[in-house]
Image (cartoon, rainbow, N blue to C red; front, side, top):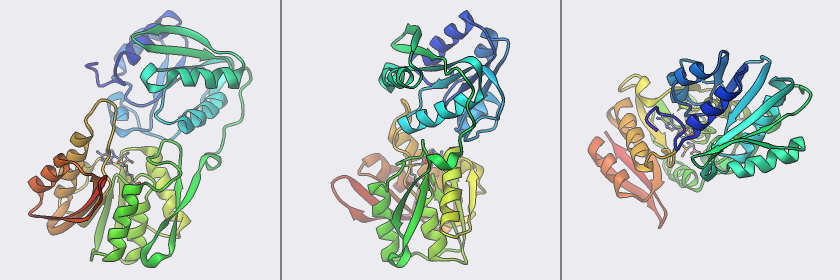
Amino acid sequence: MSDGGVGSGVVETLIEALAEDPRPTLVWGERLGAPTPYRAALPEVAFATDDLETAKALGIQATVLPKAKAWARIVIVMPKAKAQLLLRLAVAESLVEPGGAIWVVGHQRDGIRSAEAVLAERYGECELIRGKRHCRVAAAWPGETSARPELDGFEARFTAPGPGGAPLSVVSLPGVFGHGRLDLGTRHLLDVLAADVPAYARALDLGAGAGVLGAFLARARPRAEVVLADVSATACEASRRTLAANGLTGGVLLTEADELAPGAFDLVVSNPPRHEGRAHAHDLAGEVIAGAARRLGRGGRFLCVANHDKHVTRALEASFSRVEVRYHDPAYRVWDATR
Ligand SMILES: C[S@@+](CC[C@H](N)C(=O)[O-])C[C@H]1O[C@@H](n2cnc3c(N)ncnc32)[C@H](O)[C@@H]1O
């Protein structure tokens, strides 16, 4: 793929299928590429996405759910997690016109066949519209339009150790990293923070996910300003819910690191992204590390956890004057780096 799309032929296969049967369609998913080829295939097409980069490529706002509007067809591009597919199907059922179609498209590698099984079970039938390039477009017809589901019904809650040992309530939503459970790496970083809470007046949780690290910082130093940033609208919504569940205040921003003012923080914490499509995890982690460094003033600290990987160490050493390992085991390291 050269268009920044979901990759491996998904977008091409979908556009071919849409062009064969043009009708008003909402395409919902991440890494959809540019809008032009869809518009060439369909007279009426709109997009919804949770992801900031996808939204920018399409010229739309990233949102957790699409706007309430009836569509003859809703296409869901295979999401990463089954819980997210189930949420999106429930919402699509409330947006599709009576008799309208729900399509799911994806690469076999992304589990499209399991989505076909979900469609068949949920709607009694599932038809293969197109299969090409190891990608499949599957269709089902829900029949009646159903009521729009509340996001609250899809929340998963768990606890995480807070400052002084008092637990924090964490609220996550389908599609958020580590949905419904505390990630082991995050747990190690929390332990390092709890053992010796750093001093900070302005702290940033970069790639906040459900907001567990940011909530820890907001509770540990109530007078500090804490910002939680993520490129996923759903992660931002989960972070807001986590802060609210703990009676905490903090700014939650749908933004990339580089959109934040340089040197604005004295502490950044992060469990950087590990996998995203075909991009190498260490490239992504490297970008987040460099982005974190630019957000810090002189002497500012960056605490991060990642799988033990020489690329992470190199990225830290390239941007920080002092880099220490505060925790390590065969899988994880927690680094404490000073600008
Ligand atoms: C490994 S998860 C960590 C989530 C959370 N901090 C935790 O510990 O559970 C990484 C997060 O970074 C976000 N992310 C990915 N690229 C980003 C970027 N360029 N800027 C900010 N956040 C990003 C992802 O959406 C994801 O929520």
